[in-house]
Image (cartoon, rainbow, N blue to C red; front, top):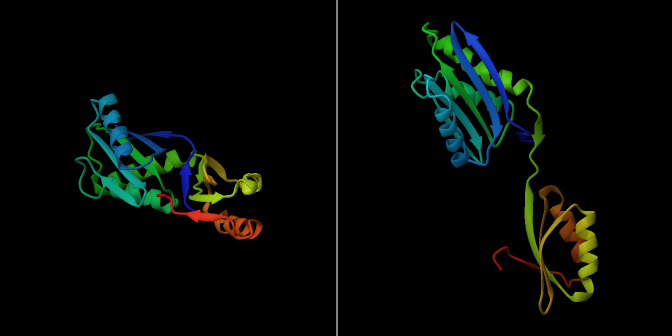
Length: 197
């Protein structure tokens, strides 16, 4: 099961006078990640590099920001993948200390900065939710509301017209059971609708 992070976590590493400030945090996607990176650049104007890696919504990115190709972003991304994380941004701000680390040293430094931050991070499972819409006669509204509550569904909208139309979401893992149960309890009077209706 993919995991995300409950809160941002930071680490700091000094290696041959270079300072590496690592951070991992949950993000919704690339746009939010770019905003975080821009904020880091503004907060650390004297930094030599702001490298980052992203795994979110099927998108991935590995940015070396001027470091030799494959020595920063890609190793950071591999740490995220190895931890089965999703919707997570890893960043490392580097202040250059005047001593070259070589490709191997850079890979270790960027990997360690992210790995150390993840050691103290609280990982939380990602629960995928499914959106459902149905219409029922007024007589079944109470029954449907009780079933939604018992199955951990969140009622998002109710509209009273010729029938009662309900929009709700629940964890994907329980959606098939709820649909089957409502179909049986409603005696065929529950009408399922596409999300666009």
